[in-house]
Image (cartoon, rainbow over the protein chains, first blue to last red):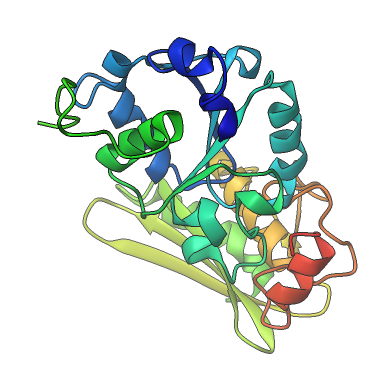
Length: 155
Length: 125
């Protein structure tokens, strides 16, 4: 998380966070909430959060789901392709530790058993507000100050 | 009904008025044997064709020759309960299970399968 506070990165990335989203064996609930956070209703794009089609263009990796055995190597491959400095956000209960699939024969034990995670967003699924709040927390290192001239996050 | 009569029975049900839709095929572990249920949906009611196979080396004839939509349902039951459907193009292949799924482990929906052991074999712990 340090690299968002060092050198030019706070200035350059504060309003330009490019995210890549990967579904690592999720039920698709969290993916729909990510979609809701990015599209005009919640509009994370006004804060500079943009979904990119390739991990090579991304600053932040959004991962959902318990990592199963088929997704494990692929998730590692995607993670390795992201240029430094990179950050990983685990979204949803499954990504945090297995969620409702924990005792299942094919369910992994969360994202951090495979790749290092910077930020966890709990919820099943988390609300779009929570996802935006989490990504902003990753960038600014804390909750947005309400006295700032920023627009309120959610009306 | 006995497994060798299933194809004929399914053909008969599918030719009944309105029952052309094979909704799904369900597999069940009944303890001593494996039950297979063919659900036909008509819009208001179901007709279910039931059969049971012995648990050791369960094999039966596929119904895909007269009902091609059964391909994926049969492939799923083959994966999860280890039933071989002769004539199904997925015979001996995997549909849902991971490539690394251990050959010596029982199919995952059998009662004797232990999820914890399978997870360890798949290196998920």
